Image (tube, rainbow, N blue to C red):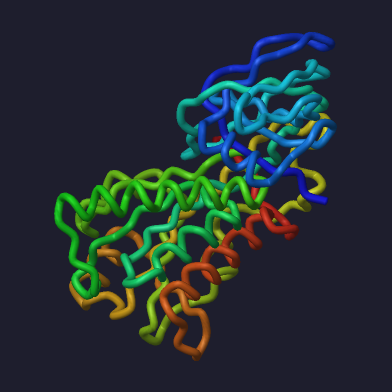
Length: 301
């Protein structure tokens, strides 16, 4: 059975055997009440300093009193990954710290996604967060069917952050992806600098496969070997993925991406919806790099 995961901001005080106070966001407390968790049930929470804690509650929060009690068993840091962020501030809860989980390494994959209409963008952010991407940049492209102003841009950004947080908790991620504010394609030069590959998923003919495009990143290594004892190298897989909105990219935008070093990638002969293409693209990249059970690449961060 999966243990519910939640994000907190403040550090956790206490050593093995001690009773601790755990600061949890108010929405997490409400979620615990919704789940009707009782004493001796487990949750996992991750704090801003980068520690993942599994907690056995000895007294679950109630509608009147939102406190519970517990004791510390063990603590250890979560491995940090580029482009990840902790969650926001909190009210208070106490629990029993049973074990702390170390987040396995993930390649640093950024999704630059053309903003799509209705709930398609929500689905894209939710599902790619579940896969384990590190960052999303919503893209206001020429053919986007969504027009944003200052108010709607801020509202969308806040909504997408909430969706990513919820998806990260649901999928037991120990690190949150960064959801950036929407920007134009021609404002991406700094954001994509330093990435090993810029993969441009475009429906025009002449594209190559993900595996062919990523050959130059590094020789694959069995996932079981990554982080093995005596293995001092750190995975270095910094990949930017660009997927267009419903209407695709204009010729001018495509030219800019290619001049920026983008490799045109194909997903086959079928035409996928934008929200489907984003999930497939990210899954293929993560799988190739070892994050979804396949071989991974190595190098220094």
